[in-house]
Length: 232
Image 1 (tube, rainbow, N blue to C red):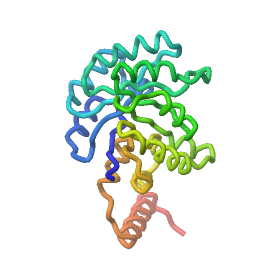
Image 2: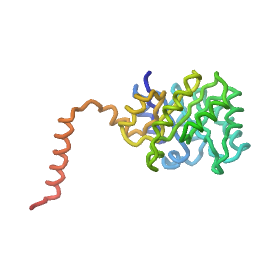
Image 3: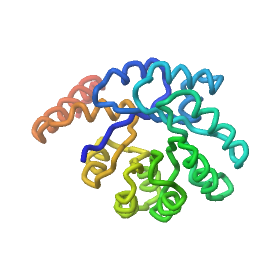
Image 4: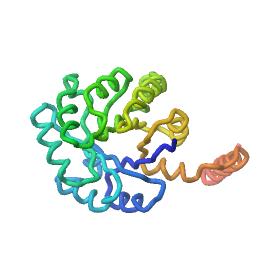
């Protein structure tokens, strides 16, 4: 099974550039990325993204923290495009499982990207809340788990095994830290991995030998030492 690469991004010019790449099969974004990109109006900015990416899946996130507001936002976001996946956090900021809204939106045929997932127990709760028809992406944050000293791999293995009973469920490797994560995701059988632009460009350069890497590294050190005019 091929692992699809999505681009995790918000800058409009970069989205235009990466939308042209065959390697990129979809896009994810979030309020934090959009804020850094200078977005002032969430709806109008999201629609600009969708105008560029009109034939690839795009995940757009709600930012409410309670059931009523979250559902209201989700229903509106879903109307912005046929290729939209509505991103819903698995828990709200108070630690409450968002199973009710996941279930209701799923039953209405709304494609979901359930985000901020960290373990297989959460995956199980999501899967138990959905049908076997409407598409659902489950985004597991590998890098952030690793940052705290926790190994995300066992959680991916269990989550991927659970998803096999559901043809409409895809497991996504989120929170990428290095290009090698793409190979890890492929080896595990993740359906999708979402990657920042700079790391996608490194993946496109895969294939260098260790000898090439050694020469490039030594040359880089040599150039820097000359620029610094170091002497011993």
